[in-house]
Length: 230
Length: 381
Image 1: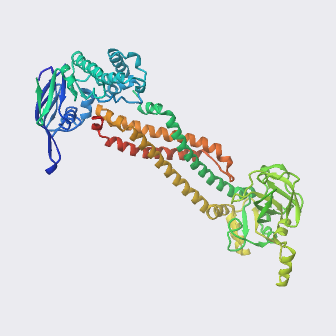
Image 2: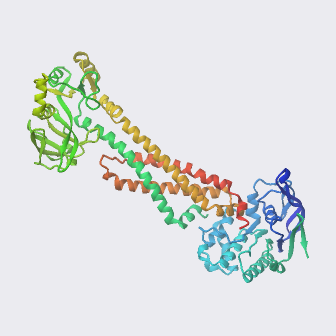
Image 3: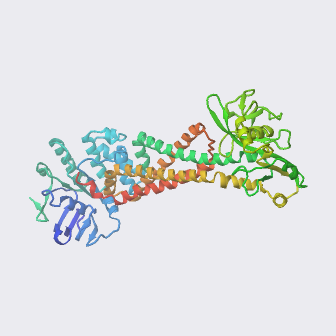
């Protein structure tokens, strides 16, 4: 197992339904994503992008295969832990189409919620959150509520939140879907910088081909399996 | 550690407080209902406590004037007094009539007693103005609820009565105000008919109707005697129904106010049920409004316990806040009710316990939504 390896998948299968309604979504997928990489995940609508994201995020259970997150094997034809939520809490950060910050928490509380749930004390969680807010140039907004920030500022807070628990992997579900071209480019460049500087692997679902040149690799779901494009 | 319930409530404070006030008003009505019940029990015992006698001798096979018609001869009081165990014995009448007010009439219960007798039913602690009756005729003591003042004149039957005393808190078991007149006046009011009625009665052969009837003989016993044994002795020799004070209290609570108290009890239970359902629906709606947030929390990996704690705490805070508002509301309005409403701390504490349990039960519906929330709902827009 390489130290650089963030996600490793072997012979992963996922299907839905039974009998006449049986449908394969992911079939015999095997790939590796390294830390520091920004990988775009592309496919037509309904091809299984979100399903793959849910499998990698330990939210949905595959039918068979093996998954490693960092050094830890988490799935081997069954979950190797009862607490998949703990894996998410400790190893994975999520970025959504909209910022989806918790509306009743201020910015710093949005950032410290998950680390605190992980057992980090309030002081250390806040120190890390302030560091991230400074990194994203919104240090002066820590007491603001999400409703008081612009869309762009909220999206930066959402990215900061995904980093707050020091994850090894960030799963981003179309983070630029609601943004214009320039802001989309800004976000993707930001994600690429984060991947390199924070040494995390980022898998980003996107429909926007214009974002692909900014990514390190492009992963496509083709004929129900995973291929990497040049 | 971030207190999710506190932050969520702070975010929608106005809405939360208004909701708590709404539920609070409902709980306030529950407290008022409990107060009406307490007031009814207290009212029922006012006359019994004011008279403070040991024995009630009433018409045979009746429960006495608190529960049904009872008529016995006035001179029985002398016979009763003849028992060596008896200390004092007096005749008493109970009579419902409409007391004329300025532009309407007020239902009252008139207590007739021997002004010169040994037992005075007027509790002097209740006398807030004037004096007790001192003359055999045409004097009346009324309660402050009637609105009469000292020296006012009231026309009753063929005579005019002068108000000589005002009491406070004197009520009958049914909640009607009590007034006090002499035994002779009471008997006259009861048995003096109009001229036409007298003519009709004479035509029917009814002449010289016995007016010396009363509703009960009340008595106290000398120290050292057992009240139950004395009661049994009188029953044996006089063929009358005899009740001790404790037995009359049972008659009042079981036979007089039982149905009313059951009705109020049922209303109270229904209102508590309704309040529980309303709290549950509010929490359900509040949880539904947060489903996206809850899905995101679950997707990010927050444990169910943290989210469930938020829901349960919010429900409890809503219930407790509603209880506080309910108490304030009840204390603001209870005096406006026509009948006696007694708000007391044990009832309040009981309701508090019920509210806490109801809130926990009501939160289950929100908790179920949290447990079943699909984290994948956070993904895909």
